[in-house]
Length: 134
Image (tube, rainbow, N blue to C red; front, side, top):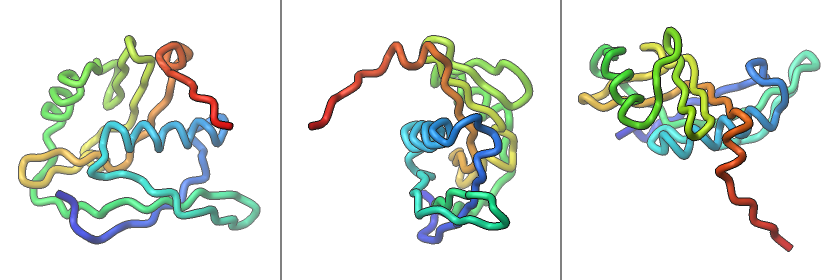
């Protein structure tokens, strides 16, 4: 379990075409990895660049992450390794990238995903239910 401490992260959304794509990434991360969930704290503008500020539980590691363990975990959750440290779940239309040993931490044999980059394919939206709110 993560410690009671948190880290604050700034993100200028440079990996995404639109801010909504970044927010989708946060929601997907929180769905798949709730033990290291992101909380949107607010926004910060510096030198004309808008950054989202998120808070995430701090994980103090006690062992080196085994990338084969990450691959196995992802495979068992419906993802295939499509290149390097990137994974795709074709049936759900989800891509997750950058799962190297600095972004997936290990503590007491458990994996903690702390710096994920999710993308959704067009197929993702075929599986979603939209609820209208008055």
